[in-house]
Amino acid sequence: MTTFVDRVELDVAAGSGGHGCASVHREKFKPLGGPDGGNGGRGGDVILTVDQSVTTLLDYHHSPHRKATNGKPGEGGNRSGKDGQDLVLPVPDGTVVLDRAGNVLADLVGHGTSYVAAQGGRGGLGNAALASARRKAPGFALLGVPGDLQDIVLELKTVADVALVGYPSAGKSSLISVLSAAKPKIADYPFTTLVPNLGVVTAGSTVYTIADVPGLIPGASQGKGLGLEFLRHVERCSVLVHVLDTATLESERDPVSDLDIIEEELRQYGGLDNRPRIVVLNKIDVPDGKDLAEMVRPDLEERGYRVFEVSAVAHTGLRGLSFALAELVGEARAARPKEEATRIVIRPKAVDDAGFTVTREETDGELVFRVRGEKPERWVRQTDFNNDEAVGYLADRLNRLGVETELMKAGARSGDGVAIGPEDNAVVFDWEPTVTAGAEMLGRRGEDHRFEAPRPAAQRRRDRDAERDEAQQEFDGFEPF
Image (cartoon, rainbow, N blue to C red; front, side, top):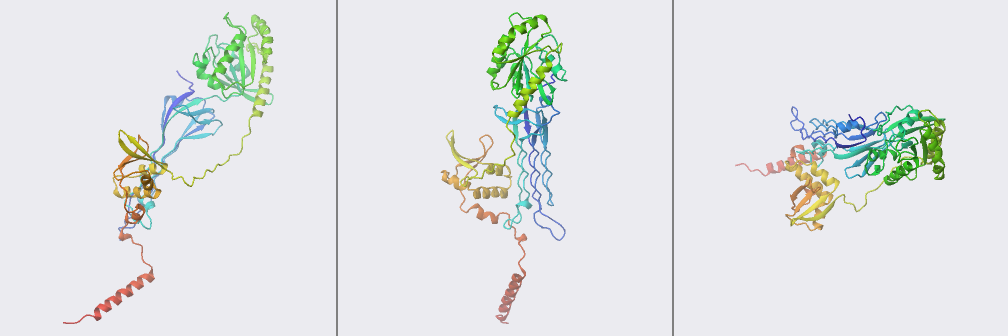
């Protein structure tokens, strides 16, 4: 039964925004009290957050589909809908977020680090929010925007200071069990370790973590054995420790050739050339192992390696190894660049950036002008095309943004097809250029004489005086029979 998973494919869906409400206030003696439709609530986000208590991606292996809640629709009486609840997904420290193409989206290191994997949709405005001095009684509301849908890949790269690498059964699990309080599975057969094990080591005033990476074999960097699955766990480690078996029963193997093979696999994997190395000759408690260690040590030291002869079983040579690792870890930590204070980067919008593009496309002999941009595409999703007034409002917004002007510049003519949005999810219509600008027609959409603003008192007096004078003139000119 699977208990450790370090790579999963995850489908996340943010919540959709709630629809706005189109409502008119009504009460006794005041049947038409004005628009009072509330706004829709925002959809919930899907957020990945590093949690130190989580060590595996197993939960997402069993449940790869996650969705946040939708926002509630607005209601009459100026009642806005409730926002959807964010879905927070805890992930282990060292999780890398990628898209399906393998591009890195986020590298989550450090407790509390978070990344919004899918953003919730905006809530639609109710007709109360759409009302203005020129549009006093909108008979429509905006729809909520659907939430993002994302297919992502989560990969776990163990965050440790030291990585133990070597052939299967070289004694890595035994070594980590005596250096720390970790209790990995230990047995006398290859590939005993099927998952990376982590341990915490204290050497003087230095505390560091050590990882036991599952056994590597020739061809591990190309996928043989378990190497390709777990070589990624070496990437974040500051120090590499080659654990070499000096008491192997395989006649064709020896510590030097084992070292050369593992180094070649690390080289082919890439990105590890600058890590300091230490060589550990393990199992010197075995008589033949002690003799072999003494034979190969000069050769290894000539190559520039620091060599330690140890026995995990007899607890021999461990103190010196522990303090040597603490020294290298301290140097690596001191060499890391200090974290700078968060800088806010302001990127002002270019003065010639219209916020959208118009491109001329021809598919199967049919001419289409495609409009792409965050605002036009969002406005289309917010429009109820069953409501003529809402469609007119969309036309006004697009015209004010300058879409119609750009279509004319691109050579669009009456009856040409216009698509707003990406090719697989676009709204297509036949374009008819307006004679009167949409912004000028805005005042005629949604106007209702029953909601005329009251006239000032002075104007009402002048109007009454004018009506009285007109009536008096008619009376003076009346002749009886």
